Amino acid sequence: GASMCLGIPMRVVSIDGLIARCEAKGVQRDVNLLLLMHEALAVGDYLVVHLGQAIDRLPPEQAADAWSIYDAILAAYYPGTRLARRWH
Image (cartoon, rainbow, N blue to C red; front, side, top):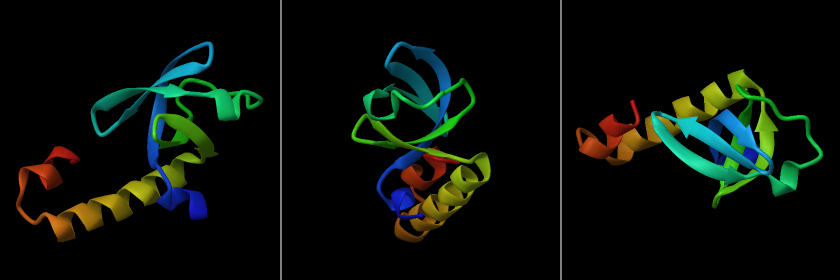
């Protein structure tokens, strides 16, 4: 969907109130859950994160699709650089 282009898909590692610890490609971030406060979120869910806010929930296969697109973009724009490798 359109939301895929707005944010980064991240997996929920832990939830503490309206803050979720999320992980993507080995990088962890604290994410604000205010916009999804009425969703029943659980550890292992995939969220679309934009500027530190969780803006949508994704099925795992959609998160994987999004990452394969990001990987292709990174590889195309930064061939052979450390940046491209960092996300793998």
